[in-house]
Image (cartoon, rainbow, N blue to C red; front, side):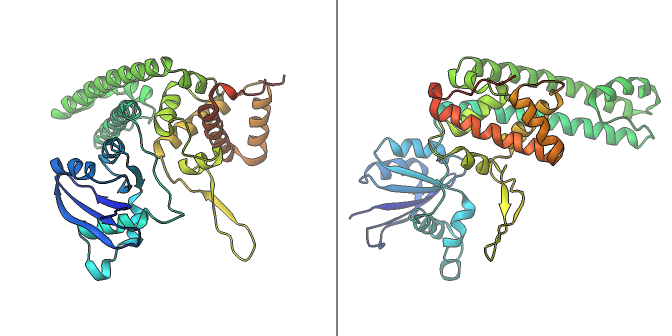
Length: 341
C-alpha cells in the first residue's frame, strides 16, 4: 500500500481518515478512528503529505504528525468546501476527509502556517486578554443601557461614565442601584485582570530579542510585537511583506476586468486581531505627529493631507506589517535607514 496523501477530518472523539496513492486511488478509508488511535495509525504509515482543516486542535496534531516524518498542511475550511462531492456523498466526516485529501494536492492552494507550542502560549495570553477587554466593553454598554431606562444618559467615554454615574446612583430606584454597583465592581475586576495580562505580555516581549526589534518600529508596542511574532513566527511562510499585509487584510480588493485595474476597499480578510492592533498603532502615530520633522513623520503627515485620515491610517498599518515581516524574516541583517532630519 503506497500512500502519498492523507486527508484527516478532525473532531472531538471520532476522526475520519482518507488516503490515496500516486494514481489518486483511495487505498486507506477509515471513517471512524477513535481519538486515542489516530496517532498510532499515522505513526505506522510511511512519510506522506497530511492535510487537515485549520480548526481547533489542528496545530497540536500537526506537531504530533511531524515527529513521524510527515509533511503536514493546514487548509482554511472555506477552501475545502468546493472539493466536497456533496451531490454524490452528502455532508459527512468521510466526505470531508476525502475533500481535504483532494484540496491539499491542488498546486495553487493556500495553507495556514503550523504554529509551534511557544507561539500558542503567547496567543493564549492575547486571546484571554482580548476576551476580558470585550467583556469589559459589554459590561459598560450594559450598564449604560440599563440606566438609560431611568432617564440617565451618560457619555460613552469610560472615564467620564464612571465619574458622572456617582452623581446619579441615588436617583436609581430599588434594585437598579445594586445592579449598577455590581456592574461597576465587575468592571473593576476586569480592569485588574487586563492589567495583569498586559504586564505578562510586556514581560514576554521584553525577554524575546525579536520582539524587542519589532518594538523599535513606530506604532508597534509590546502587545503588537508579541502578537505578530506569535502569529507569523519568523515570516518564512510568506514570500514578501505584501503577502503579510494581504493576509492581515490591509490591502485593497481587486475588481479588474478587460485589462482595466480597479481597486476597492481593503479586504479585511485574515487575522482581525492583528489588523486592529496595527490600525490602533497607526492612529497613535498620526495623533503624536505634532511638529516632528523626521522622514517618517513627514511622509505620514503628507499622506494624511493628500489622502485623508483613514486612508493614511490603513497605509501606515500596512507599511508596519511589511516592516515587521522584514524584521522577523531577516533579523539582524535588516536595518531601517536612519531618519533624515
